[in-house]
Length: 148
Image 1 (spheres, rainbow, N blue to C red):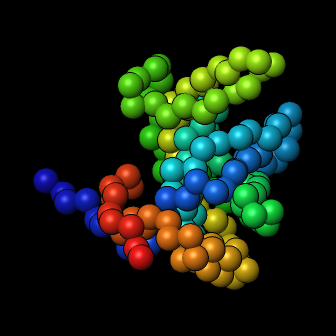
Image 2 (image 1 turned 90 degrees about the vertical axis):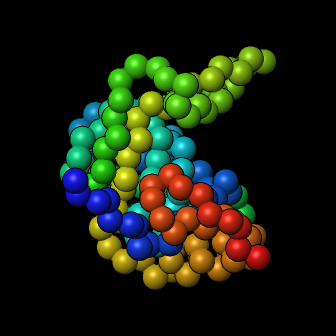
């Protein structure tokens, strides 16, 4: 049986970044908010309520809570689609008037950035080090201890 290779790219679990995706070409596509599971200088893992296919090209907008934004090009390289609801689904809250509606995000994807973005890379690392965000070194969803 083949052994899975370990991920060599350091990934950060960050809760201070909002992400929006838009498929390209832009035929009838609208911006789609997603939830970031983890992020690195070369890509990110997300949950979405939109079905995407491998090799879909995307325009990605990353907005940090401190006000900085980055506009990146990416491509879907991993797809962990599973139709239907499950207890493993991630959820996002949608605010409608005075009520809150939980929206399931059953689709999980790995997105690779199509270019190197030195300013984004530097900002991601520097802001993560300052805020002590959790780092993942192995596996797609495995956790490691927080760096101090």
